[in-house]
Structures are given as C-alpha cells and as structure tokens.
Amino acid sequence: MRDPQITHFHTGDGQKGGRDSMTTNLTYRYEMVNIRPGYVIVERDLFSSAVRSYFSAEPVPPKEEYREGNRIWKYSGMAQSFQFDVRDNASGEIIKFRELLGLLYYGSSPEESDIHRIGEIAHENRISVYAAITYEAVDGSRNNLSPEKIRILNKCFNERIKTPDKKILILPDLFNLYKAVSYGEIMIDFGLTSMEES
Amino acid sequence: MKLQELAAKLGLKGLTEIYDREISGVYISDMVSDVIANAKAGNILVTVQIHNNVIAAANLVDISGIVVTQGKLPTDDVLKMAQKAEIAIFTTDLNRWQVATKLYEAGIR
Image (cartoon, rainbow over all chains, first blue to last red; front, side):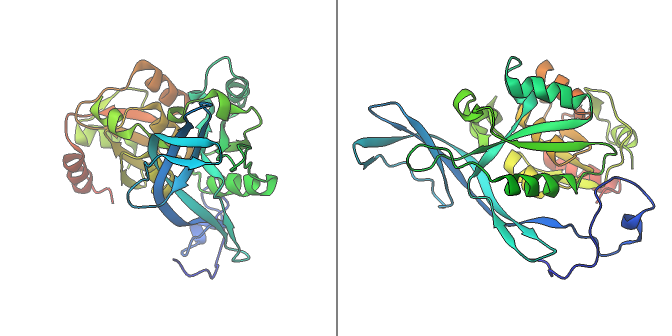
C-alpha cells in the first residue's frame, strides 16, 4: 500500500500545463485498494428455479450443493472477478464495495432497454453510462449501493481519465437490470474459458 | 508515442479508425476484472479477448487502444462498440509475448 500522505490531487480534467504537469508525486483523491481476486458464484434453487450469486475469495471456488431452509441451492456457474475497497486519500477512510457484483456498460445492454436509450443520449455528450449491478441479500432482495458510494465510484473512475471531455457516469441499477441481463453481459469474467476457446 | 506510430512500428493491422492518442504504457491481460482493477488511462491493452466486455472495461479506464493477438478478429458489433468509444482496435498474428517484446523494443514502458 502506498503512503497515504497526500501531496496533490489529480484534477482528472485532461488539461496540460495545469496542476498535473507540476506534480511529481501524483496521486488521486480516491484510490482502489484491498483488491481481492475471487469468483462470482451463481447458484439455482432446485425447486423454485430462483437464481442468486455471491462472491467467494476461496482459492478453489465452492461448487457443493447445500440446503438452506426449504431450498436446495445448486451450483450453476461462475466467473472470475474481484472485490475492492476505495480509500479516500483526503480522510484516510476506507469505503467497502462488497455489494458490487459488476458494472454493465449501456452498449452491452439490449437496444430497446431504457439504459441503452439513456446511454445513447449521454454518449452524444461524451458521457459513457454504466449501471452498478449488486449482489442479492440472503432474502433475495437487492443490496443496492448507497448514493454516496455511487458518487465515490464515479469520482474514482473519472479522476483517472485523460481523454479531454470524456466522462463516466455510473448509475445505480434503477432499471432492475439484474433481472433482465445475463451474467455474461455484466463486466465480470463470466465464461472466460469458453471465450478463450472461441 | 502515438497510436499511428506504434501501429507502423509493430506492423499492426487497424480494424477501426486510429485515433490521435498518446500511449502512456502497456497492460497485458485477458480478464476484464483485471483490466478494471489495474490498467491505467492511456495504456495500450494487449489481449486475446474479443468479447464486447473488453471494450466496456477499456472504455471505463480510458485505454487508448487494444491489440488483439494471435490473429483473432472481433465481430462487427464489437468493432462498432469500440469505434463508438473511440478506442482503436488492432490485430496481429503475433502472440502476447511477442507483442510485449516488440513494444519494449519500440520504447514503450
């Protein structure tokens, strides 16, 4: 881990000759830290066909079938992924993003979907739209990211961009996309092996 | 070094428009999660992956261009997505290691 002492924050505005060019020890306000590689495990209930997913950092991804109440969960698939925290270098605070399953780019979603339509309009203004897809809670509800976490995620990615005028806009899953998209459309390494073979 | 100069030095075949972008370094990976976590803005990404999620990840971290190795060719949909994101895609018959050595010889660090 880097020394948390801050000398300067990157403005992320892509301009030359400003603060960036004078900075020798460049760092960002928000920094991705505690990156943990692991797996997104997808499982199905044998009786109701309900689907849910969770993150596992175990070296060997768990595939065992197990009972939970009146449900039997059976392994359905997995993807390589990672979890991370974000450190606020101004305060030293560590913000955990354990709810985040992955990001969905608007361009990877169906053309008739709301996020695709919004993404197309945003794209005309050099804004790339992504939706933050989250894991389910144990009761099947969604663990959505708080508005503050969404803001931090946006700042974390935007302050690194060098291309002038380009912006990233990460939205919460306002569109219930988790119900409509497949795991392969979310930016996790789902089906990595089959992709390599294709 | 700009993308156009790099393409000429390495003999890369452009599959999209080649944008006027500076290369700040190289990242070699076939995992989108790894690219999101570790690649830097302005990097050129060397990969064998041709899935559209690679474009989505490259766009998120502001990759300047992608070199697809081992002669793989992305589909038209993927190329269209890259073009829209203004990310240049190149293809080469070389493997990732060969591309890495050529990038080093070209002065990219």
